[in-house]
Length: 295
View 1 (cartoon, rainbow, N blue to C red):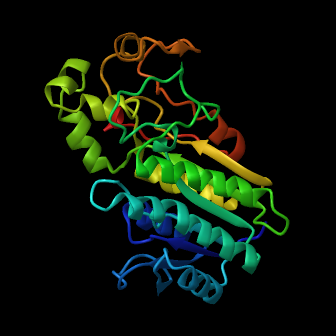
View 2 (cartoon, rainbow, N blue to C red; view 1 turned 135 degrees about the horizontal axis):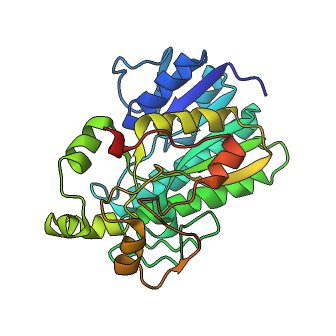
């Protein structure tokens, strides 16, 4: 599938800027569709777009004439907006993008899903996964508006993937916390990342509920590019993660102390991640390259 022009919604955000730079570095023409005024990002063109307005979405995508669309333009957390706005930003904007790309004949779409789709992240109750490492077969049981929006996003994406004249390739990337090297240095390298240190710092619930996971920003951008270039048919939800946890305590001990009810499906001999990214390797040819332990 030949791709020349890629629209990135939310290209002024953290992952968006890195994605635009990654795409530009690999020879693609890029268009940033974002609410607000241009901020001097790496894109080749910019279109101000309210992504919760279906008319604006269609108009901007039609004018850009993309070969692929990367939809990152959603609220990143549920903490600062009403619940319905958080859900709308994730679920309805994704529907509008998919509806527009179907009408315009765009063949490749990448959507920003999240670890929260499985009922992790912003949930108030401690996460209790049925098995570890988790993979794409894990049940999706969110209850907060952000997680429910991501689950709905994936349901909508799967539906469009079954339609006639739908985008040929639809990928929902389940991101954990995507972080820069500077953030990794401050949050991981300079902190006590043993379980007792995480507890003392008041971070245990957040880290527990995200499976002590993270993803380097460059690895995230590369995954987005590879998903835009992918050539499978239908919809694929795909977990992403760094190759190891953000915890200095060995993974086997983390499981024993934090997730005692989980079925352990592999041998953990070090600090291996609790998220299995084999599907990303199989479908996208992607593997994580960067780790905070190498800083």
